Image (cartoon, rainbow, N blue to C red; front, side, top):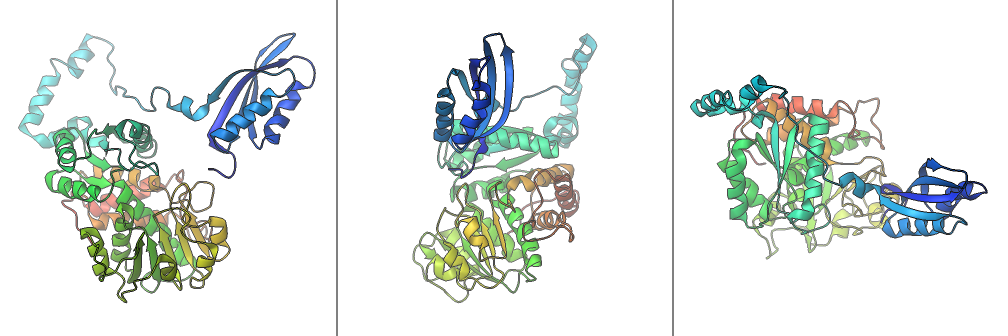
Length: 469
């Protein structure tokens, strides 16, 4: 639940009040007395006896929104006509659409865009498949693929319920990088079916963005698709998160004057995001890392290690620490959480090293209260928009795919991910850098272009395969 009113729980109440008297002035007071915030008050119809007014206000959650409506209805003379949830209104009919880039005003234009003229273009591609990148939407199109098994923090809610999220992802691709992306929501959670489905639709796309597929299934899906396809396959929950975390940590360590190769890093979360973050941190020079899952520290002596956890055990925790997360955090310079809410307290952060860095990225409720963490840590970041230093994947994936598509890359390499993280960090200038500004805003005009340029340069025109840390 949001602690303060948020636009994501914004409502518009259409109501009538008497034209005379104090009812109009009482509306704002009623909303504020219920703890809401009035953002607009519009008279939509005026008469001698009645005024029709739209009151738009922000609430904390759905129950709070109803309490605001009840308070408005209690104002003498008020008649409620309609209550609209502005978030649901935004989603009516979906958030994206397809538009033609060429005019179809007459028979000549139709003959070139479609039959018979299009046949010549099709035959040219049949002779040389590479021409599809030049002559079709393939050069600028990404498939956003999900099985609905790990959607946001909502869990396994299925492909239909995942569609609004995937639409939003497609809208972000267009807004921040000019890329035409399309949601592909699959009604299967079978690895073989997912891989085969993506393989057979791949000719129509220049890249594949895997999204909200649960671990450990997502690892195999990505690995097999990289082997099968000649276009980039990028799992944003893994690699987008890793790019943003490394970029933010690079700047956070600059703030506290520490180097990544010298700090102790404790991580909470060994799933898709945690695994990818870890690999990129190690590739960037981190040497002393302990990773914890819900059973405690991952170490070689555990008898429950699957392939992913075994890799973590082999590359981290050199001292073989076998305790819990709280013990692992003691004395650590950096905490990175990609796990679950409320697993640490302010006292745990107080036990960290001097000038500690805390990334509590569980969303919407972080691993530790940001306010409590800020009392003891030098730098605090979250995944939320209502605190400083929001680490959000939209900082990475639009620019990454812009660079991949421009380079006509055939795959994604670790060098590209490191280049993207470095470019994202560099958007924050030395003059701007500080404890409350280690990562740029998602609306910073240089983010996508800087990341795209770095990926494009790293790709060198064409890149093949994927090299793990």
